[in-house]
Amino acid sequence: MEFIDLRSDTVTHPTPAMREAMAKAQVGDDVYGEDPTVNRLQEMAATMMGQEAGLFVASGTMGNLVAILAHCGRGDEAILGDQAHTFLYEAGGISALGGVHSCQLPNQPDGSLAIDDIEAAIRPDDAHHPVTRLIALENTHNRCGGTYQTVEYKRAVSDFAHENSLVVHLDGARIFNAAVAQGIAAKELAAPVDSVTFCLSKGLCAPVGSLLCGSKEFIAKAHRIRKQLGGGMRQAGILAAAGIVALETMIERLAEDHARAKKLAEGLKQVKGLVVDAGSPATNMVFPSLAEDVSLSAEQVEEKMNAFGVRVRAISQRRFRLVTHYWIDDAGVERTVAVFRHVLH
Image 1 (tube, rainbow, N blue to C red):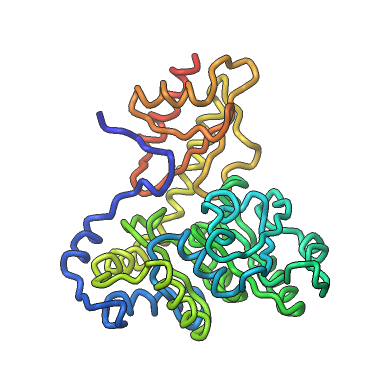
Image 2: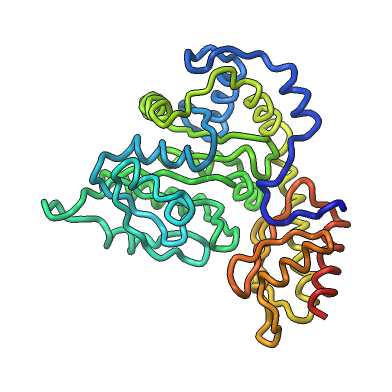
């Protein structure tokens, strides 16, 4: 059976052009800085983020961990959202491995943190308190419905942070989705912050890897921490080659994923037993919920959908997350709506 897989955009496979580039990639020892393909990818990434330098890492989780450990010392505090990926889904790495304390603030509906809340969370200079060092943002925001924040917001937070001797890290795993949705270049969102990560292996379809970008001084420190975490790779150009193709060919087409997400949401609104969040989707994520009169749980619906060749993800007892990507076409959207209708009839 050929499955339609909407569980995440992490299920994407490399395109034929990526596979060809991987097979032909020039490689060297990246721990020595001698892999030309990795070096080119890092330079491309830094330019696209409006930063000085880039570092190829194994995953977005590693990128966020390296960034926060590079910015913060043991006992320092990082301000982040209570729905942030770093707080919820990265195994507590900043605390377990870096001794970094976290202060969780409520995320606003668009995934942002209110500047008034940030200001109130900054610790006074008192020996009883950890030192507030960093503000961590996320754009697009996974748990807030795939929403995005604006350039104006990024500048406002960064200006406020710098006025208060703080740094800003941006978890931009899907920053290109945020940029495409607003019709802007990703560097407009990333340039105001002190560091930014983005993933190659989600909507951009590369098989492995993320990039961490920032100043040359910051990336030099991050490079050492990556090594400490076991993230030094050798002939990594085979992976970086796919990332270069991703950055050259896969960004603008993210608009197609957004359009299909809207089409999917409109179709699901017509399915009896489903409720779709008003205004959803902002990018490539759709969050339908089961109506009150549906006796099945989301996990039971997920199981039934899977039996008909459609993979969806239950994120709570009554709610799903569906993510469109390169491998979901119009026919897949229509089939998903039809299977939901059949399962819930």
